[in-house]
Amino acid sequence: MQFDEITPQCEEPKFGGMDRRTFLKTLAAAGIAASGAGAAFMLPGTNLMVMPNSKGYLVVDMGKCMGCDTCMMTCSLVHHGEASLSLSRIQIQQDAFQSWPNDIHMAVCHQCEDAPCVNACPVEADHVDIVHGNVRTIDPDRCIGCTQCIDACPWLPKRLQWNPETKKVQKCDLCANTPYLRDKGGPGGTQSCVKVCPVGAIAYIDKMPDQNDPTAYNVNLRDKAWKSLGMTDEDIVREG
Ligand code: SF4
Ligand code: SF4
Image: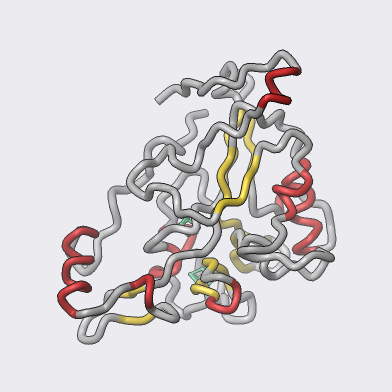
């Protein structure tokens, strides 16, 4: 199986026929800055959506992950009250035909700058949650289960999941809406996957990874303690 973290499934999103750079120039000319906006909004006279950046992001170290699936179990547990791999919003996939570090793939939502999934939702169920640090999230009460958001996500595997029980789509909300998590979640709070990973292979950061670098969400989280176990703490080379 080939994972597509390195190569997005589609080209850079277009904004009303403009590439991102041209789009931002248009915004600047209109005196509008996405980062200063309080919520996602349509650029007047266009069908272009402007959305504020998420205040938090998950990054991963695929060379450190040992594929125990603890993060998947806890993700499902804090959101749904049951430990189910299929209800997890982070997906760990293993390929027995590959060797380290390409044998494990950790699929986390990128909380994209101009999130294609948000743009695709016809009923604004997939939206920017300004109450919880602008995380890209789905309101289950509004979702009609059309799966257009899944189609729009440019990454493989897709970072949104079909919930077979509710017949709706769900995605990572950085634990903002977690009825079974005792801590406060969301940007600036606790992310259950980060908290439970026994080897520290997932981290929360508040600086947006480079949106033009498909590898920017894969980082080196190995510290001196890791090296003292006889493991490499060097940067790893992945197959392209
Ligand atoms: S499946 Fe739900 S969240 Fe996704 S595009 Fe359709 S209505 Fe929006
Ligand atoms: S689900 Fe996909 S498109 Fe939406 S924010 Fe996450 S990575 Fe981006």
